[in-house]
Length: 457
Image (cartoon, rainbow, N blue to C red; front, side):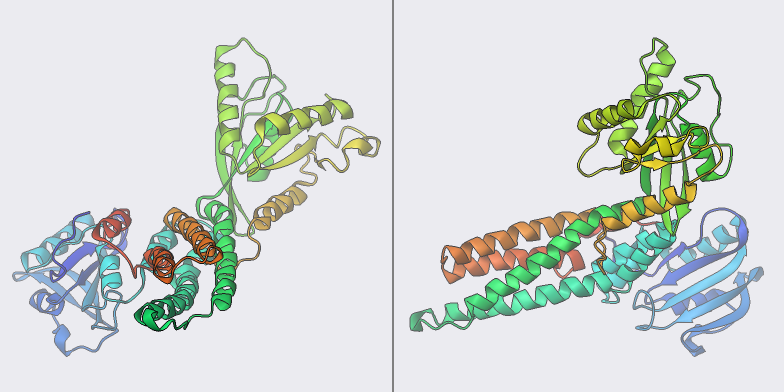
């Protein structure tokens, strides 16, 4: 993303593309009200901030549309500049005509995320807050919305700023010592610095650990349903979705490709993946489906391993679970074992499986609600009830660099490193923390971030 002149007045359609009841066209910059005055039936200079006004938009002497224009005067606006938002009828013709009219009068089309970029540059929000805007727009569940809203309102960045400020105070004292090095004066208590480093390290570790939870909340929890043919995988998927999404048949090998769909449970989005039954087969198409099943196992956060209680004895099931855990389950994955067709066998006789997994009947829907509760619990276990949750890969990588930097500073203290080198290593940590909120940044970094935003935001 190449930055253009910040003094330009920019415009863009801020609502989704296509025909709708209304569309909103946003205008921001120094010439906003001068441009609006040329095309709108009322003078925006005479109007109060944060007010909406009904009138007409004219092109020459022709009325293009009846609209509502909302006025936001600087600095009390999203970007910190003068803003006007035109709510017009949703005709694509009307939208394009008004947009072209604004350009003819002196505005230019906004780049991706340029309104949010200006909000950051004008100090209306820090960098992590502007990034949360994109997450808020993309949120598809209550949990994702909650996390993004907390970050946009500064919950995460205030925590980072607090840690950074405490460390900066110590760095300043150590650098002050360097000015009095001839007099052998010590301003910074090394014991307190060790305690501070321990506190910061604990908090950073908690934030890094929260990324696993934050990532699945942001992108949905991938859940792979695995098992032998006729274990009831497709029946379970249909029951979870409450619709006939997958074909169910007594014929083994019916599911030959991956079937995916999503549901939301207690505000958390789960992406269920029904896979081909795992078995030895010479059928080329079925073999490809089985290969895809193992690929989905690798990408899943949770694996539902299903067994047909009628088809296997207890020890056979236990042996297969042990082998599957050893060969196919990583430490960062959750495995939930499901023993299907509990409506057709005497569950009380299968005591060896009681503590190994969950007895269900995919056909009758028995214990499906319990399974949903288990899924939610497994996701929430990774959160450690952290107030701030990391969902951004950029933040996650920076926090890991900060942890490595804290380790280096602790090593410096243990080795009684000279103050100038100690101060340098602390400054590295401070710079890394500053990259999260944008206190330390570059045009390349900003370009990479805002290039992923939508036009009009």
